[in-house]
Image 1 (cartoon, rainbow, N blue to C red):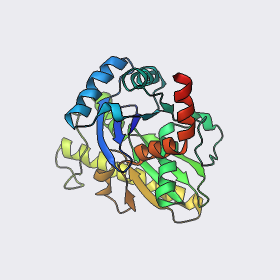
Image 2 (cartoon, rainbow, N blue to C red):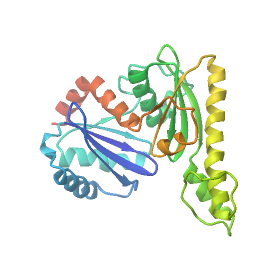
Image 3 (cartoon, helix red, strand yellow):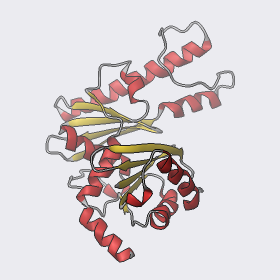
Length: 265
């Protein structure tokens, strides 16, 4: 079985793939001070609870946008699962050309989204990932990663609004019943939801215009289902896209994984 670890700015997602399907997925808040033993206590208990044998995990891959978390997650794989994890970086074989100025600075999550989307759906396409930041990633007809755009995530916008305006409450995002708010909470919810829908539609339309084609529009990330209710923009909702990218990358680099495991042993 393959252990996939996707480290985002807000959450770390652990998932196990048994060769056919995702056998389990769990998330924990990102904290780069968390030790490998703390991770182990948490994830081993969850695996046992759903009847998955940790000893059957024989491969692992880590993708992270938080470099400080990598040491303890790598140590977790080595000490508690006895595997040497692959790290999703430019040193692996991605099977995809990256047409950006500095490939080394491209976030692993963005490249993984492009890889998985190209594999499953084919270009041209745009992936919209609703995370801590909302990212827009472009793959052309030739399957090449072309770059994209990055906007503040909607929850960052909520936090900023609350901090900057003392009388405005901290609230959660949700689709409002009406666009015209009759009180402060509804007005805020309307502005945040419909304003963000407008942002996403505007960026996607501008990127599509520059591509001079009609790309498939794919949404991923935890808030993708919510925002898909407010627009007909998306052709596909793919909540596991980043995880699938890690799985595909691990499979493509299995020979490299075996080499690393042998060196570690």
